[in-house]
Length: 249
Image: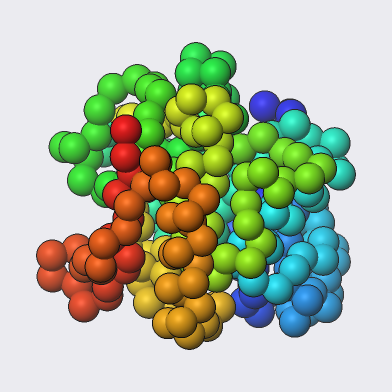
């Protein structure tokens, strides 16, 4: 798995919660892609650690682009992106275990090879009874908080850096457009309840007008792949509302 590097984009002050819950395997490297506002703080905090801090950009989609770019500049054909605020039990196996990163890397690489895709993610549920078996090509959304993706010197075909929300929707559609599908590890779930936007704790604050503008850009770019009608609750009992994106076949 030495051809994969971990990337963690962040606008939060250190320490990064994800690294406390999901230590990077010793044989792998990690790039902390720090927003300019927190770059110095992270550089100082992680100065004597294996983590490498690099200067990122302002904005959610711009940081997504930096993951592609910095992984490429570091010489890695693939990167495994993680949100900076993942809880300890974010990833769940169908058998009830909570796998760590070294195990997830093996599954992700297997999915890439079997499905012949350049973007791979996990099942968007924490309910293991809804999890499936094996690996599959899919049209479904790949969550931005945890996925493996190929690096790129110029990621403009995969992400619009002007987006303030929906960058994972855009990426899913762009990679699907290129490969005919994206990849899903069916037997590993991703618990979205603790992720930044769905938990209502995003470190990047934007207006509703900006959110609407991003939605319209995605719909205009991929009219045959995705729809967005209104909003929906993250869970039936939640007060958090998110855009009602639906991927089309």
